[in-house]
Amino acid sequence: MADSDKTSDKLFAGSIPRLYDTLMVPLIFDGYAADTAALVAAGSPRTVLETAAGSGAVTRALAPRLGAAARYVVTDLNQPMLDYAASQQGADSRIEWRQADALALPFDDGAFDAVCCQFGAMFFPDRAAGYAEARRVLKPAGRFVFTVWDRIEENTFADEVTHAVATVFAHDPPRFLARTPHGYHDVALIRGDLSRAGFTEITIETRAKLSHASSARAAATAYCQGTPLRNEIEARDAGLLQLAIDRATEAIASRHGEGVVAGKIQAHVIVAAG
Image (cartoon, rainbow, N blue to C red; front, side, top):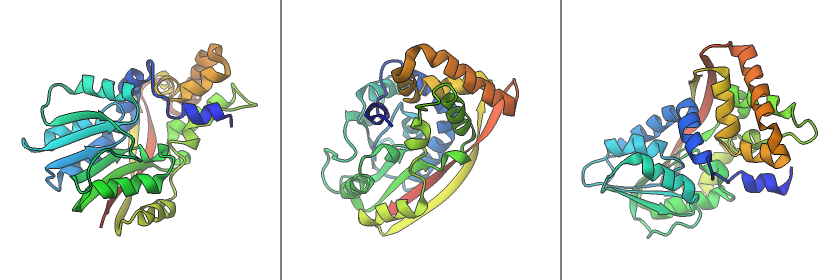
């Protein structure tokens, strides 16, 4: 793996924020955003911090569930993603948008009733440090709610796209999807990292859902243009992006048909406290 691949894993810039939100969020994120919002809102928190908010899928799901007096701080390390999320939310005086690193949060100890993070922990260079920061800013009875993807083999389209794109770059296959989004799935490791961060009450539920796309090409385009997989492809040969999409389309269509397609997705939904 080239060093540039590691760098590009976190690069959500240019057209990626818009494509990510319009293509990837409906495909795989909305269902889990609803789960996260329900878990956070169940505690009737007055102060909420969201880290690694991305294009705002959880923000849009959670904001309507919070009380009129709530304070909701939405953060992301990536300013273009945060800007896009804010542009999609609409005016809401309860929400503060702030660029912040989840591993070095600019907030006081015990400032929040709840911290949430959807599919962001996989990108943390030090997960235990990120969890320790979440615990630091939580009030004593606060809860940390977050999600991570299960292994890529349990996520149909991501697996099929990865194998298809590899046929275009046989000597140096782009492995973003397997390496990063689906690279942190070991439940024992997750529990260990949370325990090292000081959490004592940890619940992990593995939830499968069904991902739908209007066509095989729509699913292929979402993964190849709406994620940093695009950065990996273009770093190798930008002229082959369309071929990569075509190969991924063919792979999905061969297994799921030419019309509306559906594939399994699976993630771990985690609540930590104590």
